[in-house]
Length: 218
Image 1 (cartoon, rainbow, N blue to C red):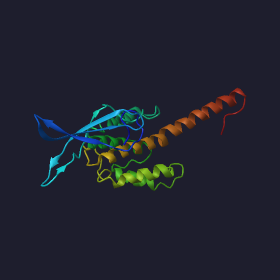
Image 2 (cartoon, rainbow, N blue to C red; image 1 turned 90 degrees about the vertical axis):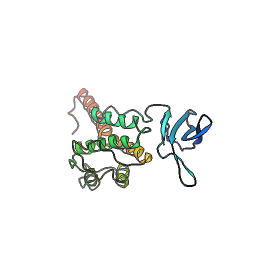
Image 3 (cartoon, one colour; image 1 turned 135 degrees about the horizontal axis):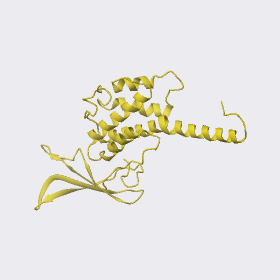
Image 4 (cartoon, rainbow, N blue to C red; image 1 turned 180 degrees about the vertical axis):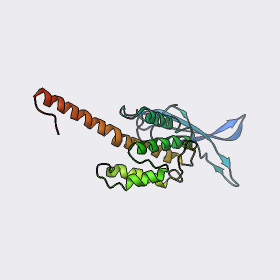
């Protein structure tokens, strides 16, 4: 997981406690840990249940402190509508993995559609980009690898997207929802940040060539 304070990737070492009401045990638990990177406290809570013989720890924990996103800022070259979906997905990650994944799914589909893969089914979009034969459009190996992994997230990529199912809630595990954001980070860099940086460098070169009274670079 990423620390919600400093956003550094950390290993989870939680200490859980029973929530009591008027001296009686409840099904609620609180868990606390200190980030090994920034030394700040992280607190979460969740409701578990009793099985026939034992207590089952909460499956869905809710982040209590700190509130807010644990992701870094979206690069400025990312389109505003895509950045908005990403920011909301990051904001609700610790409250609802399903809601976060739904927003990430829409964000991913928009990115791939704008990259030239117009399929309405995300799995078909992913298949198309992973099997791209045009070397100018093919993904770098690292990005290719992490995008391929999303096809194993339950039914995340299997549902078609329509006006009515754009934000369809799909079952995912919390770590899968967080990984979806990692995938988007990699795609932001590939489709937006690197091309924009290259364009600015090209424009700067052309300005220098013009100042030296030479023709622009071909």
